[in-house]
Each structure stands twice: as C-alpha cells, then as structure tokens.
Length: 158
Image (cartoon, rainbow, N blue to C red; front, top):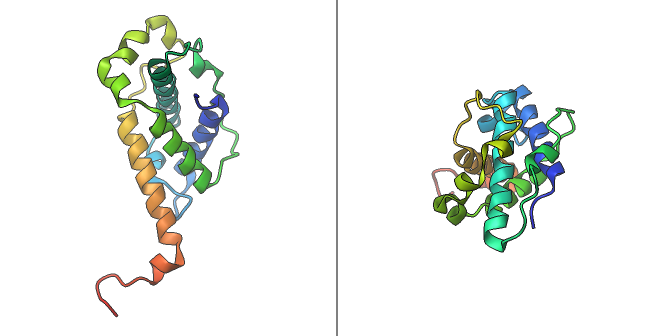
C-alpha cells in the first residue's frame, strides 16, 4: 500500500516549520532547517515517487498517474507533532525498496512526461541520505527528552 498524498503535504509543512525554528529541541531538525522551501518540496516529491515506484515494482501494482501531483505542497503552518513526523518518515523509508533503485526501475520508469511540475533547477541534497539523517536526528531529540536518559551518567558509574 502506498502512503496517502496528504502525508507528504504535511511533511512539507513540518519541514518548512523547521526552517523557522532556531531553538534546538524536540521540535527542531537541522537537516531540514538548512534547506530552502523549494529544496524541501522537491525532496518530498522525490520521496513520493520512490515510494510509488517501489510499490509498483514490488507488488506489480499499477502506477498512479502523476501521484506526486496529488500532493498539496502549499505551506499552511499546520504541522504534525514530532512523533507523528518520525513515524511517517520511517514509513517512507521502510516503503522504499533499495532493489527498485538499484535495478534502475525508477530511472527507466520516470519518463519526461512523468516529471511535469518538477523544478529541475533546484539542487537538492541526496534525498535518501536526507531521509535517514532526518530520522536519526529526530530520534536523537526524542531520546534526549526522556527523563531516564537525562538522569543517566555521561562518563561515570555514580
């Protein structure tokens, strides 16, 4: 099953929110915070295509015609909480099939007409590394909020 298009739109909102935040806490992610709005939109669009093509390759399902065009990339300032964001990012990562990427199915399937609406002039960081780094950073922020972690000793037994 593919991820609902609305989820990708909400992730765009959360990632744009990160660009406004300066306080490093559970609601901050420097990976997304350093990106421009256009880079965020293109990265999320790329994730949506990877998810779609991975689904098609794995389950031999039908391609949803221009799935990424169903995503609302309009910033509304309504973002999911940090825990929901992490869960959705992990779901996206889980759904992306590395074999699909390695086999070239994605490259061969993405014809020029499928890329309508893509801003090819926007240079985005490696989308898969960005996804992994965001997940790692958000997990770390969540762990640091846990009282038992806060109470644990850094460099001694007592």
